[in-house]
Length: 275
Image (tube, rainbow, N blue to C red; front, side):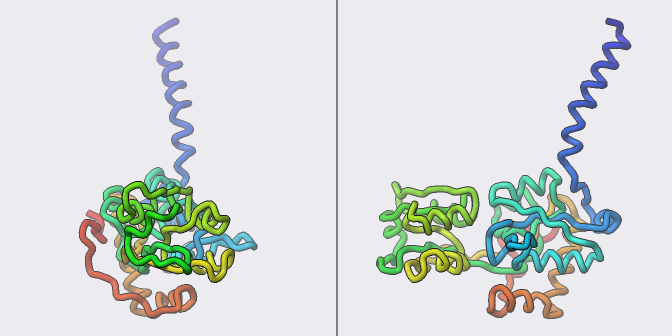
């Protein structure tokens, strides 16, 4: 084999190896200008977690996060394309370039801020422990009597693991819907969730469960990749705008039915502005 032939084969092999990597990253936009040139923004969102993000029976993405993302797309003057995601693949979908931004019930936690850039908060949530209504549950120690479902890797997983006594049986499921289904079907006796879980639990087991313990008040932000200053600035300006013009309150009225929360100016370990 000649040296030229060998070089040609190596080049061809390298190109073949590179091709799947190129095909795996359809969402390459990193600035508002690039998104506007493309004509659409690709948004990662939860696909089965009402009222935050879910797909309707008609196949339409809906929910609080969907409404906020649609407003952001309108603000940019582009269409929106949703990519439904499970809890565990939200951050990988963003960092590998499948999506431009996450509006995906992303609690603003310091460990997550090491991997993604958060915007200012636009909504608040509370992480809770939900147990049988008939049982007296007033302390973390009481959790040890139950087999508990959580969405693997979510804030409720962190809080239940942190607060439950040693030896508590915790079953981790791939998302909110499977963990709720585990409770409704009797596979577990309790669940770590958020304040909106009860709406869905009531549909399957009405009158049997209630919020028992509160662990943590959380704020959700939109996420972009680290170092993407322009899209982060656009998100923060958009969030300020919808707070001021009443659009955020309309979304709250539709999905949460409470006044817009008072949001903090800063959160320890979670910068709102890209460096």
